[in-house]
Image (cartoon, rainbow, N blue to C red; front, side, top):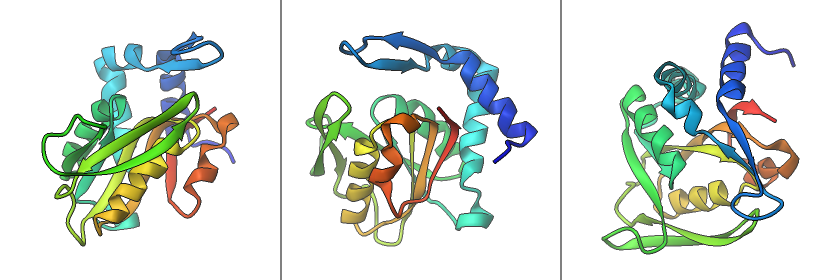
Length: 184
Protein backbone atom coordinates (compact mmCIF):
# COMPACT_ATOMS: atom_id res chain seq x y z
CA UNK A 1 0.00 0.00 0.00
CA UNK A 2 1.50 3.33 -1.06
CA UNK A 3 1.76 6.13 1.45
CA UNK A 4 0.11 9.48 0.77
CA UNK A 5 2.53 12.42 0.57
CA UNK A 6 1.35 13.54 4.03
CA UNK A 7 1.97 10.05 5.47
CA UNK A 8 5.36 9.85 3.76
CA UNK A 9 6.21 13.27 5.19
CA UNK A 10 5.36 12.32 8.77
CA UNK A 11 7.11 8.95 8.37
CA UNK A 12 10.24 10.69 7.12
CA UNK A 13 10.04 13.25 9.90
CA UNK A 14 9.79 10.52 12.53
CA UNK A 15 12.59 8.48 10.96
CA UNK A 16 14.86 11.53 10.95
CA UNK A 17 14.18 12.36 14.62
CA UNK A 18 14.16 8.92 16.31
CA UNK A 19 17.51 7.39 17.15
CA UNK A 20 18.37 3.77 17.80
CA UNK A 21 20.16 2.96 21.05
CA UNK A 22 21.54 -0.59 20.97
CA UNK A 23 21.58 -2.78 24.07
CA UNK A 24 19.26 -0.55 26.11
CA UNK A 25 17.80 -1.25 28.64
CA UNK A 26 19.55 -4.60 28.35
CA UNK A 27 21.77 -6.43 25.85
CA UNK A 28 19.98 -7.44 22.66
CA UNK A 29 17.29 -4.73 22.83
CA UNK A 30 17.33 -1.92 20.24
CA UNK A 31 15.69 1.03 22.01
CA UNK A 32 13.85 3.64 19.92
CA UNK A 33 14.72 6.99 21.52
CA UNK A 34 12.12 9.68 20.73
CA UNK A 35 13.80 12.46 22.73
CA UNK A 36 15.29 14.14 19.60
CA UNK A 37 11.77 14.29 18.11
CA UNK A 38 10.37 15.77 21.33
CA UNK A 39 13.12 18.40 21.42
CA UNK A 40 12.08 19.73 17.99
CA UNK A 41 8.88 21.78 18.53
CA UNK A 42 7.80 21.63 14.88
CA UNK A 43 8.34 17.86 14.66
CA UNK A 44 6.64 17.30 18.03
CA UNK A 45 3.66 19.40 16.96
CA UNK A 46 3.38 17.58 13.64
CA UNK A 47 3.42 14.20 15.40
CA UNK A 48 0.75 15.27 17.91
CA UNK A 49 -1.45 16.52 15.06
CA UNK A 50 -0.91 13.30 13.10
CA UNK A 51 -1.71 11.10 16.11
CA UNK A 52 -4.85 13.14 16.84
CA UNK A 53 -6.00 12.74 13.24
CA UNK A 54 -5.62 8.92 13.26
CA UNK A 55 -8.96 8.60 15.03
CA UNK A 56 -10.92 11.53 13.61
CA UNK A 57 -14.36 11.83 15.21
CA UNK A 58 -16.29 11.48 11.97
CA UNK A 59 -14.68 8.12 11.32
CA UNK A 60 -14.84 6.43 14.74
CA UNK A 61 -17.22 8.53 16.79
CA UNK A 62 -16.38 10.84 19.66
CA UNK A 63 -13.49 10.07 22.00
CA UNK A 64 -13.82 11.68 25.40
CA UNK A 65 -10.79 10.19 27.20
CA UNK A 66 -7.23 9.57 26.03
CA UNK A 67 -5.20 7.07 28.05
CA UNK A 68 -1.44 7.59 28.01
CA UNK A 69 0.87 4.77 29.02
CA UNK A 70 3.79 5.57 31.33
CA UNK A 71 6.12 7.13 30.62
CA UNK A 72 6.65 8.24 27.02
CA UNK A 73 2.99 7.67 26.23
CA UNK A 74 2.17 10.49 28.66
CA UNK A 75 4.21 12.92 26.58
CA UNK A 76 2.22 12.14 23.44
CA UNK A 77 -1.22 11.38 24.89
CA UNK A 78 -1.71 14.58 26.90
CA UNK A 79 -1.37 16.95 23.91
CA UNK A 80 -3.43 14.56 21.75
CA UNK A 81 -6.18 14.74 24.39
CA UNK A 82 -6.08 18.54 24.26
CA UNK A 83 -6.09 18.53 20.45
CA UNK A 84 -9.27 16.43 20.28
CA UNK A 85 -11.01 18.03 23.27
CA UNK A 86 -10.80 14.95 25.51
CA UNK A 87 -9.65 14.29 29.05
CA UNK A 88 -6.28 12.67 29.74
CA UNK A 89 -5.94 9.56 31.93
CA UNK A 90 -2.49 8.32 33.03
CA UNK A 91 -1.82 4.59 32.99
CA UNK A 92 0.93 4.17 35.58
CA UNK A 93 3.38 1.57 36.78
CA UNK A 94 2.24 -0.30 39.87
CA UNK A 95 2.27 1.72 43.08
CA UNK A 96 2.39 5.20 41.49
CA UNK A 97 -1.29 6.22 41.70
CA UNK A 98 -2.64 7.63 44.98
CA UNK A 99 -6.25 6.35 44.97
CA UNK A 100 -7.91 2.94 44.48
CA UNK A 101 -6.75 1.22 41.29
CA UNK A 102 -7.35 -1.62 38.87
CA UNK A 103 -4.12 -3.49 38.04
CA UNK A 104 -3.06 -5.61 35.06
CA UNK A 105 0.16 -7.62 34.70
CA UNK A 106 1.72 -8.42 31.33
CA UNK A 107 4.89 -9.57 29.58
CA UNK A 108 7.37 -7.16 28.03
CA UNK A 109 9.94 -7.80 25.33
CA UNK A 110 12.49 -8.13 28.16
CA UNK A 111 10.55 -9.00 31.34
CA UNK A 112 7.20 -8.46 33.00
CA UNK A 113 5.39 -5.51 34.58
CA UNK A 114 2.14 -4.37 36.14
CA UNK A 115 0.23 -1.21 35.26
CA UNK A 116 -2.64 0.48 37.04
CA UNK A 117 -5.42 2.98 36.47
CA UNK A 118 -7.66 4.67 39.04
CA UNK A 119 -10.92 2.79 39.45
CA UNK A 120 -12.83 6.01 38.72
CA UNK A 121 -10.74 7.13 35.72
CA UNK A 122 -13.31 6.00 33.18
CA UNK A 123 -17.08 5.87 33.37
CA UNK A 124 -19.38 3.44 31.65
CA UNK A 125 -20.02 4.93 28.23
CA UNK A 126 -16.67 6.73 27.96
CA UNK A 127 -14.95 6.21 24.61
CA UNK A 128 -11.24 5.82 25.18
CA UNK A 129 -8.29 6.18 22.82
CA UNK A 130 -5.01 4.66 24.02
CA UNK A 131 -1.89 6.53 22.90
CA UNK A 132 1.68 5.29 23.24
CA UNK A 133 5.02 5.87 21.59
CA UNK A 134 6.02 2.37 20.44
CA UNK A 135 4.12 -0.85 19.90
CA UNK A 136 6.61 -3.67 20.46
CA UNK A 137 5.22 -7.00 21.69
CA UNK A 138 1.80 -5.49 22.39
CA UNK A 139 1.74 -6.48 26.05
CA UNK A 140 1.43 -2.96 27.46
CA UNK A 141 -1.27 -1.91 25.00
CA UNK A 142 -3.24 -5.13 25.60
CA UNK A 143 -2.98 -4.69 29.38
CA UNK A 144 -4.21 -1.10 29.01
CA UNK A 145 -7.11 -2.22 26.82
CA UNK A 146 -8.00 -4.78 29.50
CA UNK A 147 -8.00 -2.04 32.15
CA UNK A 148 -10.30 0.12 30.01
CA UNK A 149 -12.68 -2.81 29.50
CA UNK A 150 -12.68 -3.59 33.21
CA UNK A 151 -14.05 -0.11 33.97
CA UNK A 152 -16.97 -0.50 31.56
CA UNK A 153 -15.64 2.11 29.13
CA UNK A 154 -15.48 1.47 25.39
CA UNK A 155 -12.15 1.26 23.60
CA UNK A 156 -12.10 3.42 20.45
CA UNK A 157 -8.64 2.18 19.47
CA UNK A 158 -4.91 2.41 19.95
CA UNK A 159 -2.70 5.03 18.28
CA UNK A 160 1.09 4.74 18.35
CA UNK A 161 3.96 6.75 16.99
CA UNK A 162 5.69 3.65 15.66
CA UNK A 163 5.02 -0.07 15.38
CA UNK A 164 7.90 -2.54 15.46
CA UNK A 165 6.38 -5.10 13.09
CA UNK A 166 9.18 -7.64 13.61
CA UNK A 167 7.95 -8.12 17.21
CA UNK A 168 4.36 -8.80 16.02
CA UNK A 169 2.67 -6.76 18.75
CA UNK A 170 -0.36 -6.37 16.50
CA UNK A 171 -1.17 -10.05 17.15
CA UNK A 172 -1.64 -9.28 20.86
CA UNK A 173 -4.24 -6.67 19.91
CA UNK A 174 -6.46 -8.87 17.75
CA UNK A 175 -9.87 -7.24 17.45
CA UNK A 176 -8.59 -3.79 18.45
CA UNK A 177 -8.36 -0.94 15.94
CA UNK A 178 -4.61 -0.20 15.95
CA UNK A 179 -3.13 2.64 13.93
CA UNK A 180 0.49 3.74 13.75
CA UNK A 181 2.23 6.66 12.13
CA UNK A 182 5.22 4.50 11.16
CA UNK A 183 5.68 0.75 10.87
CA UNK A 184 9.21 -0.63 10.82
